[in-house]
Image (cartoon, rainbow, N blue to C red; front, side, top):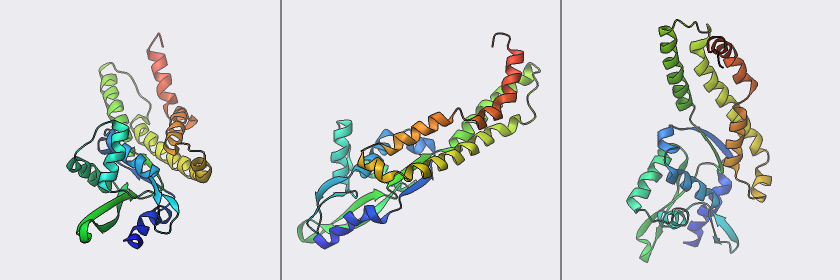
Length: 226
């Protein structure tokens, strides 16, 4: 049994340093419990490993995940509900079943242990970003036709350009942060919050300003008080 459990401790060293994942917004960002699961699997549980050393185990079973979640949410959810969220996270490519161990009396119970697919997960939703921008631009275009306002020739291309620029920048940020992974971990800095900060700062990047510059001039010309 002890030997079988070693895989739970080896898991963290055997997975990639980082993975950049595009996910549907409604399946991840709108469900706090799923983000909590991702975070606690990074935090892990400290215990004695089969080799006798005190280590952090990042592969957890449903009972352990529920216990850790209760400390965050101050409530306990049913195992059925938790399995539902875990299945969604597996479907999204964020976690996987690390191992299924035979536990309990005579090893009759099959216990699944879940873990992240990478030590650092950079999650984005480029399709949502594109669709959101496109919906806004389409509505404004309908309005401008009613008031006979001329738009820049590249107007319909802007939403896609913004979305692609976003994704390119996000991948660059992810690779840059991973260079300092050990330093960030040693000082207990939240990698995901760093990533979100860089995304916020990036929103005023000159590439976006250039994309929207001509449109901005049109608005300034036609809205007197702007």
